[in-house]
Amino acid sequence: MGAAYEVAGFYAARQQRPLWLSKGQLTPAAHQLLRLLDSASVDRLDRSRYVTSGLTRALHSAATGDPRAARRAEQLLSQSFVAYARDLRAAPSAGMTYVDPSLRPLAPPPLALLSDAAGARSLTDYVENMRWMNPLYAPLRRALATNNHSTPRERSLLAVNLERARSLPSAKGRFVLVNAAAQKLFMYENGQPVDSMRVVVGKPKYATPMLTALIRFASLNPYWNVPPDLAAERIAPGVVKEGMRHLTSRGYQVLSNWEEDATVIDPSTVDWKAVAAGRLEVRVRQLPGAGNAMGQMKFMFPNEFGVYLHDTPERKLLSEASRLYSGGCVRLEDAPRLARWLFGRSLEATSDQPELPVPLPSMVPVAITYLTAVPSGSSIVYFDDIYGRDAQRMAQLAGPSPL
Image (cartoon, rainbow, N blue to C red):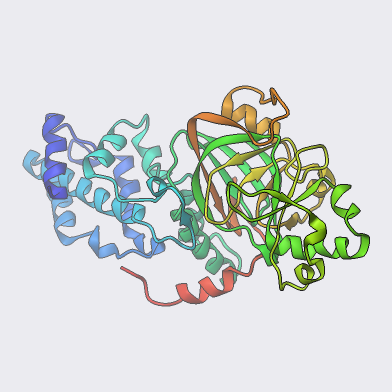
C-alpha cells in the first residue's frame, strides 16, 4: 500500500477534515512544517523530496478558495510530512548498537504518523518539537538551523550530535538516557526529563559503548564478575605482591571458566604473574557485600558488551568533575532512587542469596549514548570528546549527504 493511498484513506476516515489548512490558508502548524521541509538539508536530507513544484502550485490554488484545490493541497502537505518524518526515523546507526531490535528507529506507517499528529494536543507544538523524534533531536536541529553556534567547530559538533540524537529511539512513555560524555543519567517520562543523577563511566581505555536495550530485571546482592583485562590490570599485580590474602581480604574467588556451571578453584593453582603479563586469562568474581564493586544492586539489559547500570561503594568518585573510572559499566550516584522510579517501590533483598533477580513488570528502554553537544534551555552545552569519537565522525560528515 503506497503512502499516497494511506494519506487518502486518512482523510476519507475524517470526512476530509483538514489538518494543515483553514479555509484554504496555511495554519501556524503548516507554516512550521514548511520551514522544516525547506531546511531538510540540516537533517542531511534532500529538500526536493518534500518541497515539490506540485505542492507549491497546490498551495497557491488553495489560497484562492477553491475547495478541490484545498483538498489536494492538504493531501500533498500530509504526503510531504509523512515522507520527511519517515526518512528521519529511518536513521543511520551513528555508532549505536541496538541490542533489542524493537528499539531501532524505523520508518513508521503513514497512517500511524498522521494519526499521531492529528491526536496531538497542539499540532503546532507537535511539529515544532518534532514529537515523532527523540526529544533531544528538535533542540539540536534548531540550534544548527538557526546558526546558534560560535565557531565552525561548534557547527560540526552540532551536526555530529544531531545524527546521534537521530539514532535514539523516540521512546514514548518512560525511558532511561545515559550520556557518557556528560557522565549523567536522565529519567524521561512522556518526552520530559523528570530526574537525573551523576554516573561514573568507562575510562578512555575501556570506553562505555553506545547501545540501546530494554532493562529487564534488577539483580540484588550481585557478584562482580571481573573482566579479564581488569583482572590482569588490577588484581593480579596485587596477588603477585601480597599473595592469596589479596584475594581473601577483598572477597575474590577464582572460577574454573566463564560457563554457568563453573566451579570455584584454588587460587594458588593460578600463575598470577602470567595473568598480570596478559599471557593467561582467568575468571575472578567478587562476593556480594559492603565492599563489592557492584554495591547493592545492578540493572540488567543483557548485551554483548557485558555492560549494565549498577550501584557503587566508591561514593567519592561521584563528586569528581570528570568521572571516567569504570571498566565500561555505568556506576550510579543513587541506585535505590533509580530502582524506585523503575519499579515504583524500594528494592530490598529478602535473603542473602547472590544475584537475587527481581523482574521488571514492564521493561523500560535504556539508551547509552555519547552527546558532546546537549540542549540546555535555549542554548547548547558542549562536553569534552572524552573518547575521541567526534573528529573521525566530523570528517565523515564533511562528505556528501546520503540523500
